[in-house]
Image (cartoon, rainbow, N blue to C red; front, side):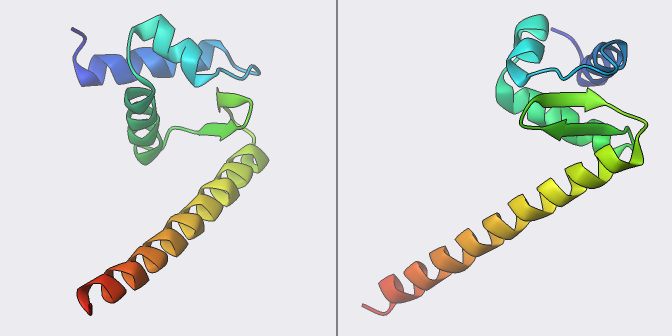
Amino acid sequence: MIKASDLEQSILKYLQSSTGKYVKSYKIEASFLISGKDVREVINTLRRNGEPIASSTKGYFYTEDPQDILNTITHLRSRQQGIESAIEGLNISLASLTHK
């Protein structure tokens, strides 16, 4: 089994070598024999470490274009807002269930 830091470095190199190309999660999964959840965790860690990994519906990609990063940030913020809305809805459900 590859240590997490080795896996992160391997996936980073994979994305860097695919510059200008989108890489779907399933391609990373197959190449490294990991799950989609693992891919998301590694991408998240790399981003937190400052690696410019952007994404779109077409896949992940390594970029040096600020607009790609801004587009990814916008997409992540919209997902964050959707998650916050879901939490609010669940809190309403919880309140109604606990007051029965």
